[in-house]
Image (cartoon, rainbow, N blue to C red; front, top):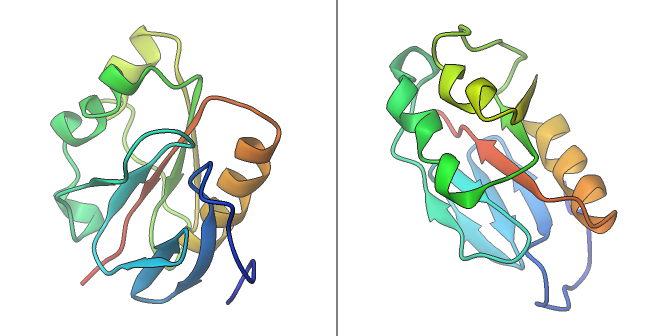
Length: 124
């Protein structure tokens, strides 16, 4: 699904997505990524929901988001609370949704000026 025809490049915006990719500012990524509005896109080294670990979610801590939108893949799945405990300890909210909904929600929150991070799982 194409979300925007073009991007200003000023903020990281999801411009398109599909079953096996996400485009940020028209740049295609075929692996899982962490996206924030004003920082470079970070590869997220996970390719399956069952491979999630606390360390993968701890990668978000230095980014200091107020909320994390977790795109859990093709269908909605919730990470076990032990996986996101470090984020909860820092009062960082985690909202789980399917990959497509996470892309759309990230764009909305980013456009509102929120300090949002999207952790987008692209399963392979």
